[in-house]
Image (cartoon, rainbow, N blue to C red; front, side):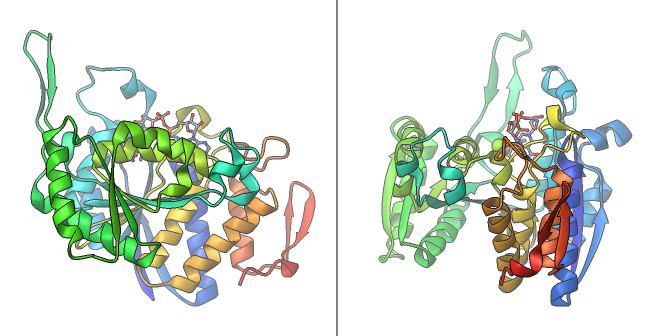
Length: 371
Ligand SMILES: NC(=O)c1ccc[n+]([C@@H]2O[C@H](COP(=O)([O-])OP(=O)(O)OC[C@H]3O[C@@H](n4cnc5c(N)ncnc54)[C@H](O)[C@@H]3O)[C@@H](O)[C@H]2O)c1
Ligand SMILES: CC(C)[C@H](C(=O)O)[C@@H](O)C(=O)O
Ligand SMILES: [Mg+2]
């Protein structure tokens, strides 16, 4: 298959993690005889620094004419620490999602057996946790009118949702639930918010078209608690933009590290693949960032184009690396590997290289076949 992939490394750890997923995608292309063409573009603080624009027109154009976008991360402390900044890296990401029509963000979360014991959560509670968060991505409070009063004494962010925005998300989530264990939980704040009441009404009505899916509802405050207390009760979670943002970072604790959580942002015409984490500025250039969230996002890219065997090869390679402790410091405190070494290891597994040397250890990959 021929794919043109726009690569937007962004800021902080964005470039170093994205480099690893490009490496892995190239190994996939070589092994499975595909042709992937990569082209880099600017976004975020890197783009503001050069062009005074967090999403230059050329970047948006490249993304539109590519088959897929591989996104790193954006964000820089100089903007985080300046509430009066006129432009922000985050606007680049939000405009990109809106400009590409990426209304659904799909965030898989699962507990890896190997990491359960070191989790701050109770091992017996999180064992077997495996859920998908369907987060609405181009509506709600993120995209409503926002302004600060002239006297600076009040500020406003408006949250709006239309039936159409809710419906297209709901259909995707119901369909995903049908493919899984047929359970869908709508997370909202319908006891307070008018928008949440519209979500409940609309999703309930659409649920009639999916009689095989058990639909239930949870207020977001309770959901945040249940996520930690009893995560195995969830299968597919459907929720609005801001609740999905917060709940997915929380859910990453179940997975063992936010550095493991991937996502696919999809719309009618475009698709972008992005780790759920940010630019982790403190780690920039230190080689400590976990590249797996980006690599698993690349696996979601492969799946999106029906390259199921290829995606499985990447996921199995990741599972093996976790089993063997070939991991960055966030999940391997005692004998950690660098961002690049983890990338090299996964690349080697996918390329079926027989021997790979990591920190002077010689691992025989020939005996660790992943298919
Ligand atoms: N999609 C995005 O690009 C995105 C997402 C979230 C935050 N941001 C931006 O990133 C900047 C930093 O935000 P933040 O500190 O709140 O969130 P962050 O996700 O960058 O980092 C939070 C914490 O998560 C851990 N972490 C994150 N990525 C990791 C990785 N790959 N490997 C190991 N550990 C990892 C670290 O402990 C880090 O301190 C801000 O400017 C923010 O706006 C961007
Ligand atoms: C950086 C920010 C705009 C973004 C969001 O809130 O969507 C991030 O937190 C994410 O989860 O991708
Ligand atoms: Mg977030």
